Length: 421
Image 1 (tube, one colour):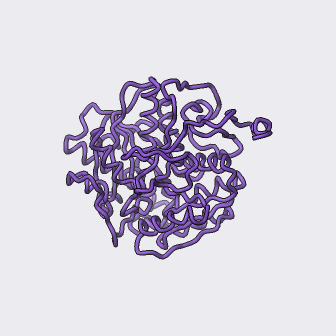
Image 2 (cartoon, rainbow, N blue to C red; image 1 turned 30 degrees about the vertical axis):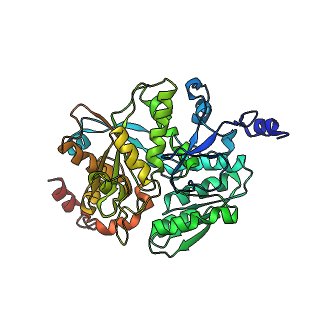
Image 3 (cartoon, rainbow, N blue to C red; image 1 turned 90 degrees about the vertical axis):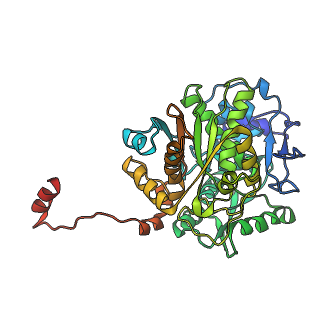
């Protein structure tokens, strides 16, 4: 386009001259090909789609302030700019303290604290990629389906980049998450439906009819943002690869995005092994984990369930079959956790200094159970993805008990003396 390079220079971004003609979307099981700009999020047979990046064997890590500048060879977008960024990424990678090591039984334990992204969850990485795509396609409005975190994230990024945002949420979405969307000027539509997965499938089918790009957590473009986590971990761990990465899993985009990043690093020759992923779900809603444990190749649909882990509530995830396929191919692990175990995990992480939402806490007890069963070796290096802040879901406090002492100025000295004893 005329003037693209001038615009890119003004924005302080990257402009890659000439569209990458060989970039395309590929269905992850049947390997059917689709154009890169396909507006529908899934293949015609409802399979997950993935961006194919050509000539990864020639990809090199470049210099640059931003992660997407350094890994531009691994990304499909032709125009990227700091003007669309809110400062996502660069989240801490911290070694688990003695308390967490003792609770899980894992000595070589690490935590990737994604709650320190701009809108307090890992979703910001995927939202940046969606904005890159929208700008490249010259779209002025984008839409998403979310239980809260993704809607909050894309709302903020849309506001930053001047793109109008519509978010469809299920009726059980916490009010604090809805308010966090509307503050950015987003139009929120609360949808009453039999369950979240049914709602998602119906709305996604409107994309082509309306000419509106509607994304969910498992879309191929969001995955391109999530894979940046792998690149960041590669740098933070100085080229080493953890044995296991534990990911609370719902729509499946996050776990496959991280793994895609490592696969591409391996194809480019930067690493010689892949991490094994650990799929974690709430026991009350475990369509993928249940299928893997029972040796099935298709997800086990869940409906009419309740779980405090509201951020992972896809009962029939559209990308689930691919995750089951990958789990078998790459020898991944899978574990579910009860409601009581989720609450205990949230408290355990709190005592270690991390306040995360219930869905993010599921990884802790899952690793504990897998270590006790012998599935995780004593010398394994295990990484937990802390996906979302506890401030995302304050309703969970109704499920916790608190030890709060009441006093007054007359009794405070005596009360404090008793406490110190």
